[in-house]
Image (tube, rainbow, N blue to C red; front, side):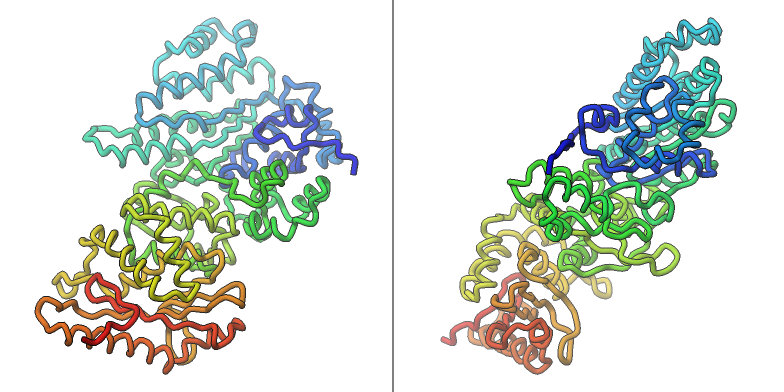
Length: 594
C-alpha cells in the first residue's frame, strides 16, 4: 500500500496534524452534533488521552471566524457532506478555546498566579481588540490591565465573560467557548488541601472552587447576549457543592449517557481502518486484548486512542502499556495504596483475576465525600479509564471490569508498588517465590513465603480485628486477602479465583492456568493460635500437622478440584497447597515429629 499519511503523535492541534499529512480518525460529525444539541452549554467528561483536546481543536478550526481559510482542512471528512450546515456555520463565530491542564500547582497562591498568567495569554491572543472601534476606552483599559496582570482578582474572575462580550461587540456574532481539562485545578486543590492539612481559614480547595464558580458561572449563565455555545471537557463531573452549585443551565454527557458515545476513543471500525491503512490488520486480535474493552453507553469495543497510536509508531517494540492517566491519578494512588485489606484490596484482586464487580457510579462526584465514602473510588476509577461498564443494572448501579491487558498491568504495578513502598517489600523475592509455587516447588515456596511474611507482617501489627470490643489477632480473612495480593503478579498466566463455589463448597484460592499444560493450584488457608511459648513442642507440631491434614482433607471432601477439571486441567496436574497460619507464621509442609 502506498502510504500517504503518517502518525503525528503528541500534537493536539487539528490544523497542524492535517497540514503535516497526519492520519486523522474522522470525528468531524461531533461538530454538528454539538452545535445542533438543544443545550447551550455541555460538559463531556472522558478519560485522559481519549481525544478531548484534539476534538476541541477541531471544533475551533471549523467555527472560528478568524480562520476563514480552514475549510480546506475538512475536505476529506464526513462533515463536508453536510453542505447546508457548513455553508451556514463554518467560520462564522468567534471562538475562545482555553485549557486548564497546566494549572496543577500545590497551593492556592501559585494556582492563582497560573490562572492570571493563562488569562493574560488568552487576552493577548485577541489584542487586536485594543484597536477595535467597537470597544469603549474604559473596556480597553480593563483589557490592558488583564494582559499586564495588574487587574484585581475580581476582574480576573469576570475575564471570561468580559472577553466574550468584547469579541461579540467586535465581530457582531455570539461566541463559542471551549474549555479543556476544566477539572485539573479542582482535583489538585482537593488533593493538596488534604495532603497538607494546614490550619487555614480558607483552604486551597475552597479558593479554587470560589474562583472557578465565578469564572465559569458568569461566562456560561446569564451571558445570553454573548454566548452562542459552550463545551467543557475533563475527567470528572464535579458535583453539587462545587463550581456548578449556582450554575444549572448545562447538560452533562458522561460515559454512561447516549449522546456523543462514539466521539471519544476509537471505535472498532475506526481502529480496524487505521490498522489496515498501516498494514497492521493482522495485529487486530492481539491489539483488542491489550487496548480495547471500553464501553461508553451502548458503544462497546472502544479502543484507547493514545495506546493504538503509540503502538503503530513503536510496533517493533511489541505490546506495551503506553497509557498513563496523569489527572486524577493522585487521588486514585493515595486511596488504593492505603492498606485497607478487607475491602479495596480484595476487590482489586478480584478485578485483576478477570472478574467483574457491581458498584454504584455517582455522576455527581462530591470531593468532600471522597475522604469518608470509600465506594467513590470505583466512580473515580471508571471515569478515569481504569474500569469500564459491562452493563447497566439499575439506576446508578453498573457491572464494572478492567477493560484490557494494559490496564490490568497498571493495577498489578499498583499492588506491587503498594507492597514495595508501603511495607518495604522485595519484588525479586515475590517473583521467585511465586515461580516456586507454580512450578510445584512447594518446599522452596514455603521458605520464600515465610521470608516474605517475616519481612512484611510487622507492618500490619495494627491490622487487628475487633470482636465484641476486644482486639484479637489478624483474622483468617486477613491472611486470605494478603495471600491474594502476593499472587497478583501471576495474573498474566493464571486466572486467580477466590471464594467461589466448586464441587460441594467454596474454596479459598484457586490458580487456573491459562496454559492447560501448567499446574493448577488449590490453596486452603487455616489459622490457629500461636501458643509455642506455653505448650510443649510436640503439641504444637501436632496442632500444625493436624491442621494441614484438615485443609487437605477439606479440599478432597468438598471436591474443590472440580473447577480446575472444568478448565481441562488433568487431575495429576492439580496441586493442593494448605497454608496454616500460627499467629503470623505460615506452615505449608508438615513439621517433622521429634
